[in-house]
Image (tube, rainbow, N blue to C red; front, side, top):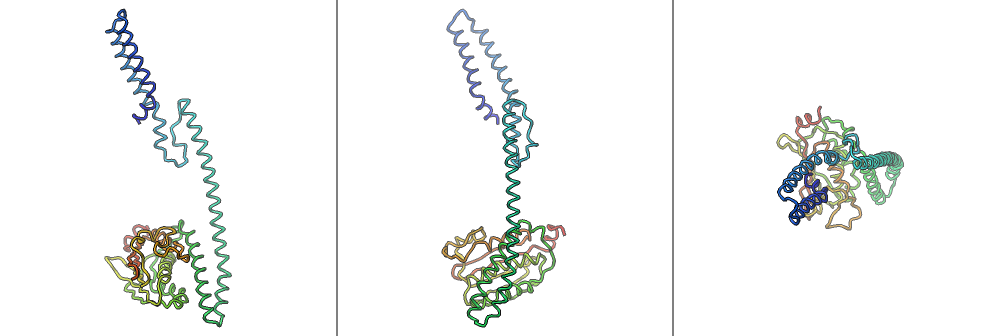
Length: 334
């Protein structure tokens, strides 16, 4: 701040220095003007001017320091009150601009909430004809057509499910219900929902659950597993997906391993980024780049770590590491 203050007052300081040199120079040229008393006056002037700069620095920079330390949270009440005319101009401008931004932010928030409510309402309304459509598909006698329609129905259902949970994730802490959850029942329920798709692609499951109970929110854990299973099935053909659980250092680890096309090493750091699909199969229009992103976001409030290991052309393994039970109880305040 001192450097900026001196740069701001540079012209005044240079003018003062120039006047002192001019005084000494005139005394030097005119022998009638005694040089020694004049040098004494210049010395005193320099001291007085330096003290004046110090006093003005502390007085003038208080307001600007308060602006510099302002959190930009649109709360102008924490700002220091302006004292000089120029500071009052700045204060008036900042307050008016802040008030305008606050009003715009409020209007945007209202519009965003309205858009969210409209989308949630639309999703719930679409679920009714979608359920009716599922019943109609099950009544079909043409098995080949039935399988194709079931697959397309499942895609629509999961896209709507992703949208619904995407809107809920920012507020999911308000919706959490932590309890002992049966992993086996949850996984089998999700597999059953994907059964028609698995049959179409010739995908089976090998399930070996050494640990069957975890402390978590069952609904959100089901959503996370659904995204990982969907991802595994999508990139697998005529192979088995292995689902295992084990105890590791007092923590439960759930593994979902497929024998699909795998993920390129350069893509691994980005697979959880929003909208990222792939660099190897960039023309895959079926991929949305949202499933893994939403799974990672949903896992964070549950203190579940999601890791991935993959080799191109060999397969991919996702691991869910659940927090220690006493650690989760402490963090969640249960």
